[in-house]
Image (cartoon, rainbow, N blue to C red; front, side, top):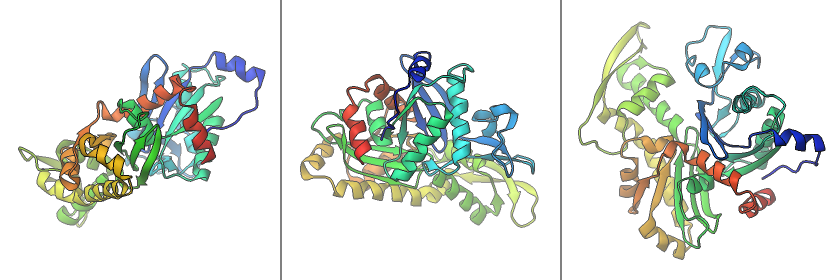
Length: 356
């Protein structure tokens, strides 16, 4: 979907001094790609505000990396929040302020710019949610906004032949959603947006620590566990690590030692759900497209692609080859940058999106 704006000469003048941007507006992180420069910004999608208000701290500086450091550690009058949940906007005003911060940062403090922006969105969001993204970007300072489906952006970002009459399968495991799509001729043959992804991995670890170790931990600790010893497939050498938290019985701080084996078991259910969702999309694919995927298999991107053994787990569950895409964390953002540089080439994609 793209918004249709009336032509205003002043907007054209401002646009001449603007840096057009491709944005992967993610639940966990926001990445910005700029024409000719690649990825220039990668920060957490977190904003620190005064509790009970939408007032961003420190004139907007408590956004991104500095705000994420506050998660779970703020005093009573301050709240560090994620304005996007499961790939969609949960807090309209804070999302707008976060986008304004990123746009201004890219433009080195200039507030009067009007850049063209391509934003990647989950395939499962509604027309109302799409309009919310566009409206937030416009209010944040965008001159014109284009929306593109995340899996299509990811596939283009890793160089898959999506414009060819050949089936391609992309799996983008992000923070809030897992985007799965079979693509051909630059359009979706079949797709789904599963609200099981990195955040659910972290939640499964939090629940495991509470049930099995009577230890209460925060989301940042759960993320560290996932990155350090998390896996979806048996490791060549199993690992262990020490974790600190609060005892759920005594209420006092303490530590516990955990193993990669138990964390893999904790993650087994969300991994199974992702594999089942891929299976469901494949079962709807036309036979000729399915035949292509026997050899080409699927490419896995997003932060979840970094979970040890995720590609092997998918291969074992579905019987098709799976591989991790190059630089999986930036695949979607790189794709939005390519769209930005080839708006005329991909005009039909935006037209179909607009009709949908």
